[in-house]
Length: 286
Image (cartoon, rainbow, N blue to C red; front, side):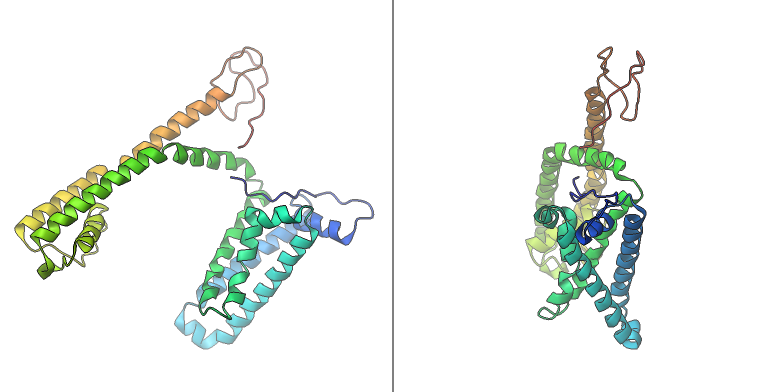
């Protein structure tokens, strides 16, 4: 998970220019000014998202529409100025623009301007909430990204097994849906095979909206079989991911070899070899 933009200016330099000072404050999260800037930014993001959610409540919009719109545009203009300042003071501007945060920063202000041409586009401003991910660096939680990377690798390793599983479930859904269409028919709401497949997926996943219900005895038997099938397979993806996660954690242990006795099998947070006491190399976050 590479989400940190390529800027790390934290210490003030003698006779620094305006661009250097802005870079230290905006991109430098270790200095007091940089940390204060990020904390204020996160509060502004959360308040702007709260305003967006309040705009969906009818009575609040009716009574406070002008206040909400004024607040929304105030935050939009502030975030626009902040984005321009980031592009201006970034050491590697194009690299920042292409980075995860750079794209999110841009997408967090575009919907307000698109709303002039596309009604309702401002609802996409909810993407601003992704900017709160900066809290990882403020609270020094970046070290936990290695655990997130472990989960990502696990899902990638299990993708073929999960694909086979979902393909099997899809085949079962088509079979059950076709049977229900033949048994129940349009008279009982099963107007087509695709709609019957929709009913099967809703049943197998144990959601059960109840908008389509089998009426015949044979249909109810098939329905019961679909429900039992759903309960029997619902834990399969969890088992696949758990097994892959255990294997990946084991592989992580064997990647750490002691430079002294050359033995492996150490925990990720171990500082010294459990066999000879030699200091272990630091774990590189992927």
